[in-house]
Image (tube, rainbow, N blue to C red; front, side, top):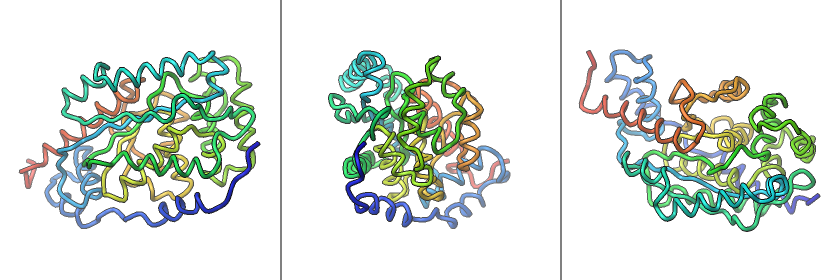
Length: 319
């Protein structure tokens, strides 16, 4: 199994997470003063957006960012089929012909997809760590490029063919999700690879970055970076999917306040993952499950948030 190279790369990430800007209470109060019913769902969304951005709620440049990475373990289980399908998806989006391209165009939402070395999968987490510390920290830093070009709402997920053992093993180690729930999500009767992956992170449940290094894919690390970078620039974030939830759990265990600017797009179907959202204090924009495709959930949730902001604009009081 690979050994950690040094404490320095992760120390930079820890310091960043510990020194993120606080949410803006004055902006929240200013928006709250314009609302008759400060406890309505509409009001909660508007106040949260103002607290994150430091200004009145108005969304003009929403962006969807998708990260794609491959895994040696998944390739060994399906002969590389999922990696090939993922590459096809990235190519389709890059060419502008995917369904998500049309959705983003219709909703006037920017779209980026990051190919995270698809031809070089992370190592097989059933027997060794996915990444060394330098590579993991570097991928977190690369994920910060999600905010390049600017945005006033960042919607982030992993582009996936199916839930990965990587994401599910992180959720089990850091979130204590029952194995039977994970098996149902994978629709797989063989928990062997998952159990082996969990063992690779044995004894590390109190060190979330080390769990990320051992079990996470490049897409999980990059989502962590995108979330941190957005906070540093006062950009609210919506996430969706198992990989994004795993990334959020990594950051929460690192620094609970690092997720104050993040909401989940839709309510997960499985109660175990609803419980994780509750445990980390993360609300979902949509209080129901709409789509199993993360990027579709992001678009729908961003539309609801944008509509809430539009309702408030120009209305000092709602009667």
